[in-house]
Image (cartoon, rainbow, N blue to C red; front, side, top):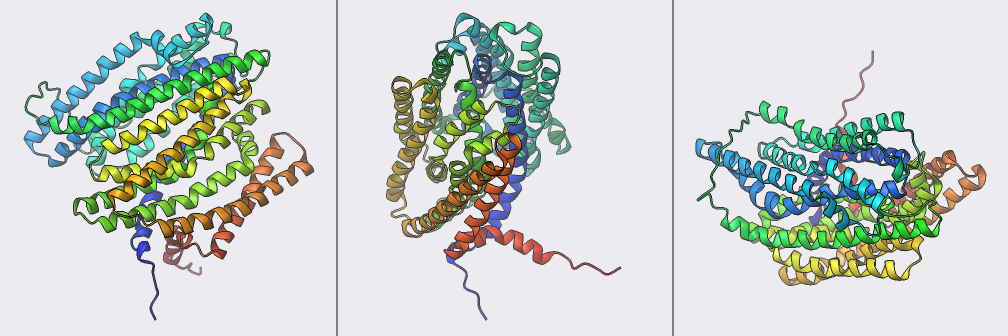
Length: 557
């Protein structure tokens, strides 16, 4: 007897297994990230002080992304990892010189950025009064050293990856979150919880909050050193890079840096609109709870959760296969892997979209205990607006990687420009046209529209690159996913409303509604996929089924 296996499914079980390994570390870090975000909201609230810290702690992330996107990740890290893999004396000296250059570059950049803290805070915010600007600048001075340690984390992690050690790099952010959570616990014990007025901060509380945030990033980098030493890595500072062949890599990095720069310019507009929206909403509400930058951040964290857990892990596992196929000019294999990636990620992104549209307020209330219902509703509405674009956003991430396997960084840049223009214009229209309480929700809607624009442009350009796309099977799968998700989402919403009718309000009722609604949603979705014969469901469950079949039988005592 023979079993018919779809051609696209060949090798997909191994892909899912590889992705599951990466999901474990990411999931742990994300769970702790939610604990950290909830404690931060409980500690300082989502008002003016929350916006001040949000801007200050966002600036080092964005400065590092800008620096790493053009120089570190695109030029130096690939050169370091390739040379380190060779292991001979000449390569060892070459790696030492590249690391020396990287560390020096990070150090100089961090010093300059810290000195420019007042200007950077003004760049990423607007309508802050003098008191709020001073508070945010003080936070930023303590947070900007994170740039240096984010860079070390990337260098150390990529060196470990080049030596076949992926676990430490994956789990290091967990250490970051643990340190930051401990710092927040101490902060709450000393300063109490609840909204902090900008004028109530002392030097000690500023150092405690921002300093422990930076200490977490320091720990994230330094915790990798023992792993490097255990694998025989040593570094001797050496200077001089003449004749090491960075010219070609630098040309490739130019387009990568341009794309990152465009994205960061767009985020500056987003940050300024979010802070302006928060100021306007607080004024309209008489300094009451109002959505601003500190509401945007946890909403974006929620939006990125399914993407980082599933899409990034699956695409990372798929990228090597596509790169090998592209190098061998096996266009059919690249097209097949693209189709597979779209359909597998779609199973999760469609479910996540339905979950937030059906249960958004209950989910945020459950995840952020100790935060006011007005704040959790604000987070929910912004996250729901973002989630409308999750499917095209994750698809665009995969499309971008297909261009990269052909060593094409120019096309992703050209796509990035209209995407950023779309959501930047949408953000500005939100600021000009929407009521203050809805400005940050408008940012989420603009982000979703930009994701649709990026995915549509990528499909059009990839059809030309790959001659055709496997559009029919992908569209049929997504249609079935949407039908199953819509039916399950409606049932979940009704179940959650039933819980509230029976149990009333409050955090226990929110948790119960989330659990009951979530169970109905997932169960209904899986049943719907089974009834509609969505083959990808079986492929995603196959590793679990195989593990159960391999479990040794119990022995009788």
